Image 1 (tube, rainbow, N blue to C red):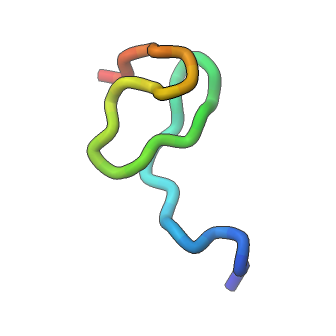
Image 2 (image 1 turned 90 degrees about the horizontal axis):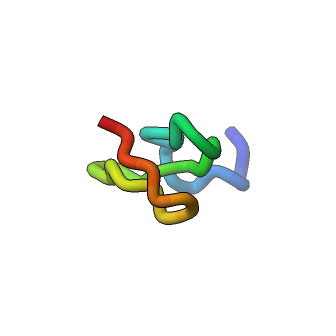
Length: 35
């Protein structure tokens, strides 16, 4: 168990690789819509 990851990674932006939270489709970093 890694203490760094307190939240499960549920998605990642197809364009920039930014981690996305549950239910998030539009990347907060680059604005790419991950459909």
